[in-house]
Length: 38
Image (cartoon, rainbow, N blue to C red):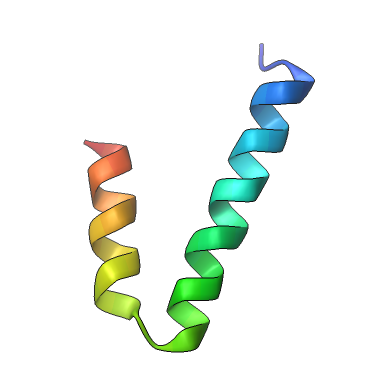
């Protein structure tokens, strides 16, 4: 069960990655997400 803080951090991370992808740094976004997944 996720706490509110963990959900909030997750949303912030997702928004941050989305911003990078939208700005055109898709490669950086993919590597960042891949690093978090691994």
